[in-house]
Image 1 (spheres, rainbow, N blue to C red):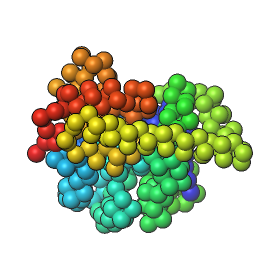
Image 2: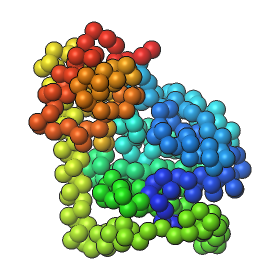
Image 3: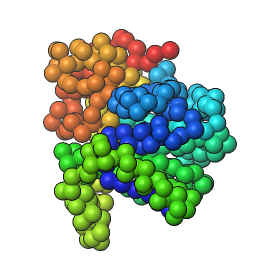
Image 4: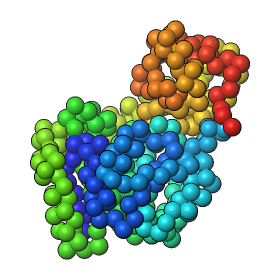
Amino acid sequence: SLAAVQTLSGTGACRIGGQFLANFAPVKKIYIPDPTWGNHIAIFENCGLEVVRYRYYNRATNALDLNGMIEDIKAAPEGAIVLLHACAHNPTGCDPSKEQWEAISALCKEKDLQVFFDSAYQGFASGDAEADAFALRYFVEQGHNVMLAQSFAKNFGLYGERCGTLSFVTNSAEDKERVMSQVKRIIRPMYSSPPIHGSSIVRTVLTNEQLTKQYYEECAFMANRIGSMRKLLAEKLKEAGSTHDWSHITSQIGMFAYTGMSSDMCDVLTAEYSIFLTRDGRISLAGINDGNVEYIAKAIHAVTDGKSITTE
């Protein structure tokens, strides 16, 4: 009962999934987290869906705004679509706990919402690809007919190969065939067929026990290195003299740290210190290493000293 197609990475999966929903969903309104990956908005609007934001991140506490999230999703009409980041939320790196995911699942079930998961960092969140699939698998166990957009760009190092999948959990083999037929009709005039090279690499790795073991070990190594950079950056900020609470950096997960810095602070970091980051304060931890972390910490301290890194 699982319908799935190869897509042009996660972006293509979101685009095909969004078009399918625009064509067939009873409520053509998709609720996405605030903040979210910037491309989500344009992708779903271009599909013809109405994009609505739900509260996700509390900038005053640099933490998940669970109450706001629940309140906004509860206000959605029955049958609406809700987009959830499966793990390592982009850009905040702030994920719900298992107990919080359970509450979100129950609410989506109560409201009969169409759940659309976007999974771009499986294996790069905790370092355990199986653990990173918890939310998705829990929702399926609870009877949600979820949709899943999946990217292999980061976790397989295949960014340039545009390798991803779009999957649908359906009720029966007959429903699966109906979904596949309609998805193929969307794909055919858009790009006809996806490239074969990247998907062949993924298939080769995941169908070979030895290569799969090596892949999981390397994912864990990368995630652990990023985690160590989180801790080291927080330590170096303290050593530089910062009195801010940077604990959100170490509590977040995935490739990014959502620092709380303002756009003006980010502009100064780029212009005066040649440190490049998005203007919402998100930094890529993959670009930090033992050789530059002290310089980065001192620069961040220089632009944040005496200023707030939270907003009311």
